[in-house]
Image 1 (cartoon, rainbow, N blue to C red):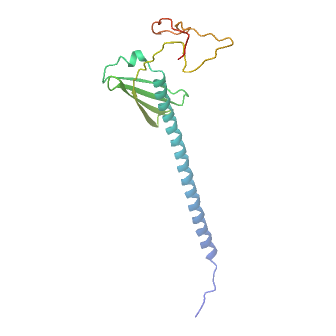
Image 2 (spheres, rainbow, N blue to C red):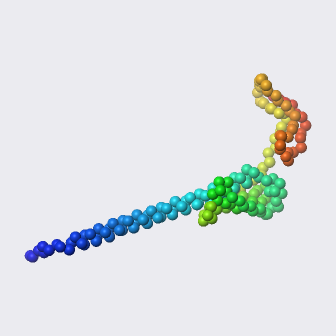
Image 3 (cartoon, one colour):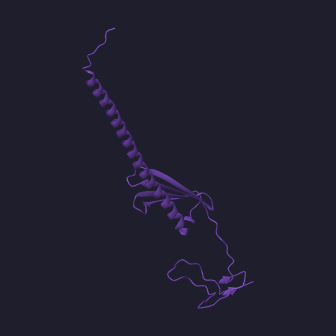
Length: 177
């Protein structure tokens, strides 16, 4: 059996094969890096949109405009829009009255560049509380009042507040069992 001893072209073949393998690794790393950057950017814009929607929903519920929303007819809706508190997006909020005591609050939040949108909703029910207030301080046990304490049953509106209900009659300062 005759063996070939001429191996003069093998270095070129090995070098080309190594270049192809390294090129494939570099292309794969570039593809993965690009995908990771896109995922990170999309996550950031989604979070901006969600933050805008949630802040709008929370702000509307915490600053509930009784005059505007409580006088809506059933089935009516009011839409408002604005900029997120942190300035990283904007929102559009819709309040819809579903029944006499039930409201649907929907907030669409958008990222700063408007490439992402998130929606947050809240189902709210008005439930007015009835308190039986018959004293300034009502306890179920013994009370020790001392120092510079002053307890008054005289009803008065806080300074600077507007739209308060009518003042009630003067009540006892302390009521104990």
